[in-house]
Amino acid sequence: MRRLEKTTIANEKTSRFFVRLRRIPGEHWYLANGNEKNVNPKNKIKVPDSIKAQDFLIDEISFFNKLVWYHFTCGDLEGWLPKRNIRKTFRRLDVEPIKQPTQSDIDNQCTAILMLLNSAGINVDVSDIRDKVEKWHAQSGTLMDLSDLIISLTHSIRDLNGVDFRKLDKQLLRRRPILVKVAGLDNLKSSLILLTGFNRKLYYYNDPWTGKLESISQNHLRKHWKRGNLEAISY
Image 1: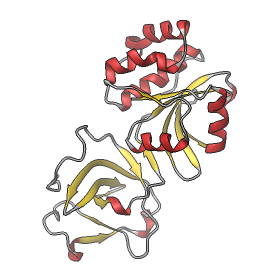
Image 2: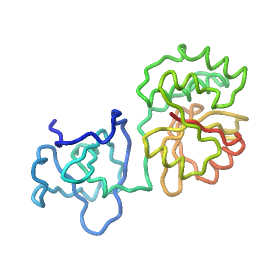
Image 3: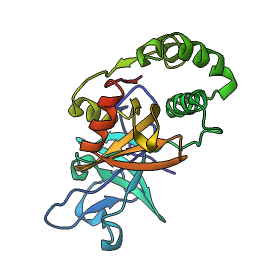
Image 4: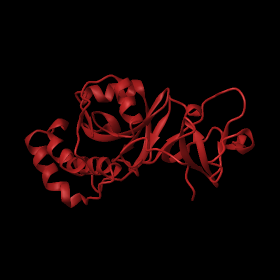
């Protein structure tokens, strides 16, 4: 596959994420692979109306012709979308949900942490972190006390305890999911979920309890997060 001539936008490898097209007058268009040299009207391909409202999976970011471009796949289509045609009010990270093996708190916590690490490209087995999670659970249970474990594997930590939702959105736009402690969700006294995206009305999260991608309104997330003492971390 040919790529756009580019300079690197970020030093990190781009983790995959989903975007949606903005509502703009006129036709949405993209560039097919191979039309990189001359960006002109003849090279622009109309995005079919049938997929305009769908999620586009992004796997590369490039800079070319004074624009930022996203390389996408959507069904059988692939090509390059200009960033300026992408909604700023939607982002969903491509993090595979994992179902916790039992109903125990430890399995819930290990599974949520494992998904967070997987999103950073860290390949670990639950057995590799279980002892540390059990020790953390017994001694403290506050998310920031996971700092040593998270930093040792991702080399960073982000304290998001009690922040406003704009800061959560900003972290998700940086392609970093967020580990959130909630209470009352799934009728559980306390549990961890992994926040993976947002739009104007909803937040998306991977729920270890169900093993699925779920969604929740901002108001309901605020309620359950507040019951969890507004704890949240990322890397």
